[in-house]
Length: 138
Image (cartoon, rainbow, N blue to C red; front, side, top):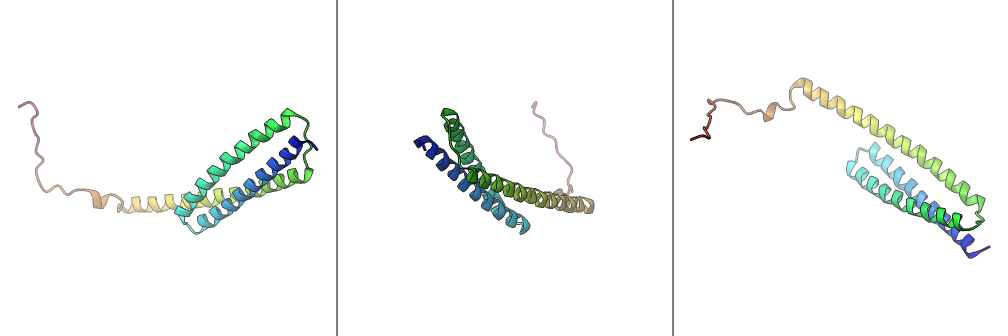
């Protein structure tokens, strides 16, 4: 095994580790969404964004290493990566469904408030005086 071949498997292991971390953060986000803990959801979204950036960098390095010379890649690591990506997909779809449900609930609550006239009623200023106009020409 060449030194580069060894490096490609190390890179793939790092990618798998990052993907597993992404899966864990996604599961945490799903729990936070279910509990409607939006601060935690936002933190998880930031963590996922950073992991996406890291995984993207690893993908570029892996692509460069693979194209530079013949590589021997262990099939087990590739299967683990595929399985992890499938799990991430399932968890992400669950998060999307929870988000859609919460969005619909929020829209319903806003419509209810609008229909009851409570939304802006407290902000309207009562006009118990005659409006005055100022001439800017004098």
